[in-house]
Length: 405
Image (cartoon, rainbow, N blue to C red; front, top):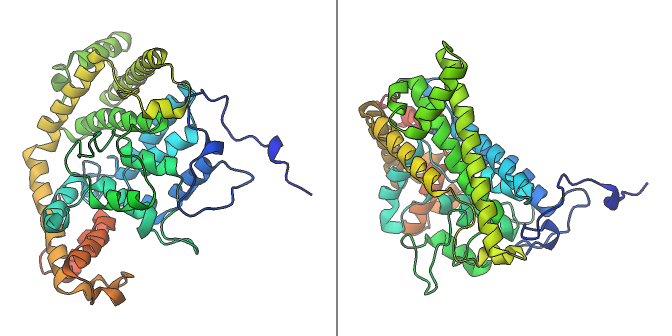
């Protein structure tokens, strides 16, 4: 019996002319024979899901650490919500859904334990050696640190998936080669020397929808988790006209609705409104740009997938509320300080005696490494930890471990 590739369904309807074409990918750093049953972007997505890094996300903080309760989002559940929204946007705009989903699933691989607190702590400790950036760390994971395949380190993802990972928030350098948001992290520059990701251009539409799906997801679920925690109240939401309108709509339609259902009805309307706003704006931009291929999207003068002016204002209002009411709440700041201390203690302990990393596969080599290289490897080890593992190891190495609740 012979496999009839032409009779297979690849799960993608008719793509727009400006969508990324998996059959015309720019390829992988290490050439591979294509699959007869999956496109290259499908294979990327599947490789991402089967990684250790993906599994670790279930025990990494989004906003509230695991000790606060089982119902709060983790980095994994956040990632799944982002992927769902990205795929919905990609389908509406007739893009490659697998590429959009893959970028969404991999975008947070480089996050440390304890959320942005961990990233800030690691950046401070590694600042003499180039600092720490979670996006650059994601690239290191998928190009070097995951060790699963016999013929290469990392996942050997396609150019398009790696481009989406690195540039989903926009170009990294300007026409003169200067960093747009500060110096480009060295791991990104190092990889681009081998496999140029064209840092001065925009990413594909698939990567752009993954990026804005991230905003939509956390703008919504951080409100949900904030209400659950008590740091947010419905009265606080009234200060934002967009949310106040949603609450009036739900209250008028379902008077006396219990709080948990009331919250969900608001959140689902918020996601719908934001998604529909993005689709409308993207369609308008595409009519103006009239791209004839994916390259036209990359070389456009502005981002194609974005919010309208009014929704951008709402986006800023929500982010400001979340920052003031949750992220900088005194209780959250206290926990953040304790989490930072845990990572700082572990970093200092491992730099003083790398053998304490136990099963870490660089231990046999680390003795002869220079200080900057050793620091980067210790940073890799710490960044890969889950919240729970970091606490467990700290308790093993130190007499007292700070409380994280």
